Length: 282
Image (cartoon, rainbow, N blue to C red; front, top):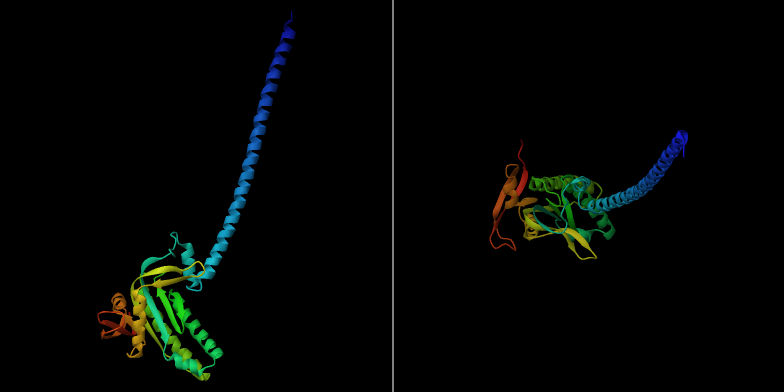
C-alpha cells in the first residue's frame, strides 16, 4: 500500500498528465486555427490581387470609353457618363433631342476652285472650330456628311435646356465663321456661308450598325426635317432656321422672324419655321 506522500505524488502525476493532454489538445487546436488563418490570409491575398486586376481592367475600359466617346462628345460629358449611378443606354432608345444640321453653301463650286490637299486642310480647320463650339454647348457629334455636320443635343446625356443649347451653338457657329472668313480672306482663301437647320422631336438614338462597324447615331423623322429646314436657308433671309417644335420650347429666349406656311419634302402639311435673329436680353 502507498503511504500519504506516494499518493500525493501519484495524484500530482495524474494532474500533470491531464494538463499535458489538455496542452496537446490546445496545441492541436491552435495549430489548426493558425493553419485556417493562413488559408484565410492566402485567400484574402488572392482576392486582393483579383480586385487589383479588376480595377486595372476597369481603368482600361474607362480609358477606352473616353477615347471612343471623346470623338463624339466633350470631355465633360464623358466624365458625366462615367460618374453616373445609372448606366447610359447605348443600345437604342427613344429620346427627345434637338438635331442640328449645318451645311456649306456652294461647296461644289468651292471644291472645284481648290486643290484637294488645300480643300482637306480648309475643311479640317472649319470642322475643328465648329465641333469645338458644339462640345462647348455639350452637344454630341453624330457624323460628318461630306461638308455637312450633324449634331445632337439631348443624347446620350440630356439637359432640360437642350433646344436652347442647340440654338446657342448654332449662333456661335455663325459668329465663329465670320471670324474664320476674315482670316481666310486675309490669307487669300475664299470665304464661305453656312446654313443651319434645327428640329426637335422624338427619335431613336444608340449604337447602330454591324459587328464590324458600330456608330452612335440617330434615326427618325426629325433628322430629315432638320435637313429640309437647313435647305430652306438657301432661299430665306436667315442663316439659322428652327422648327416650330424647337421654337415653342425656347420662344421666351429668342428673337425670331417667322416664315411660312412652307411646303417641304416629306411633310404632308405645310410647316412654319423661324429664323433666329438673336436672343432676348435678360
